Length: 490
Image (cartoon, rainbow, N blue to C red; front, side, top):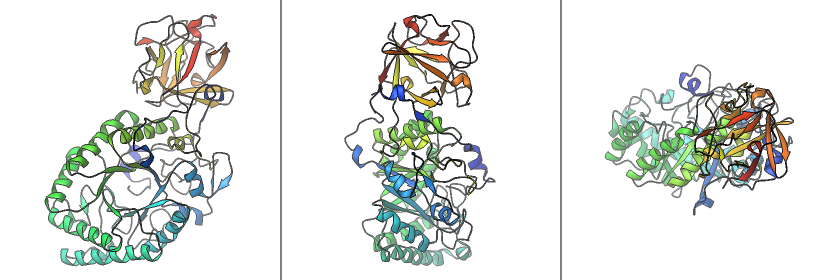
């Protein structure tokens, strides 16, 4: 993860910030059982984690956090309520006093790690091997290491990792996992440990590996790469590292992609890890807090993809952050209310209560509303026979006296598109907070009808019986074409 300040072009291209939150609509929630993730035999061992390295400095600045009920509560208690069982903490070598870009020296890390352990949570220690942020685009050594030769740097690396691991040991907070470097596609401690000099890169990383194991033999030592969609970059690193005798126990990855690309990206993680016989997990994920629905959908898509391919866990990066402490726009808390947004419902624990997904089945034809995999604003919503696809699963979110209907696969909302003519298509659009995306639920026996706030038209199946038919809208006709049965997604 790079520095979260505004000037970072890589971060700005992926992240923006507003505030949003959503909850499952009561009318639909009572009709559907909670069914979130695909079942898997090893599901109980899947790790849900979060990197909250900013938390101590946020607390020092007077920040507090509220739970979903609006009660001020210890951050770790809230996170545990969401089913989070592991905390990732970064450490810098000789950090500045900047609240956002410094601190995180090993003594501060150990102090916070004590709280993590007392909360019954596991620890992932992330070595940055720098005085501040290192990431896929930047791998600067600490200032005190900058002029060292390879042999001097090797000796320094041995001493540093041994000393810092012993600080963790003396505080009785030895980590379950240790990342030796952060997003190190291009190597570490440039230029000496660059990937273009794989023998020296490997020597430095092996020194770190050996010292971790000398102090804590049971810690799982991880190699962390970013942008797994770039398979060639991962191949370059691992071929150079393994080819020079590199040691590691697990491969871990950062990815901030959308729901539509999650499965392909996770497949790359699995493929490169399998080539070297290593388990894998994702230690960074985030998405715009300005688009709660889309980010939650993306988060769930990564979780499902990881579980289905044998991934061992996922960590959300800095979900607790708020403005104005930082301009980073990918947290999961509402800066105004200081409550968690619905993004946190991507975690399966009781604190978030889960998210109820439903299928909307037409009372006349039996077809279900289908997002059709659309990701473009203005795309038509469709209807198809029940396939079990997440394109046919929707979360109905309360919005005052109205509801909004969000697709699980894409995060787009059903949108009236301002249509006023009978037979007009119902569309899909990213979160706009427009009344075109607000619907009144009207009871119809055991079914429900959805009336658009902006236009007064009702969602209408139009009598369609063919897969891929357009979902329509029509003035109130009393027809069963306008009645929908909510069915729990499974």
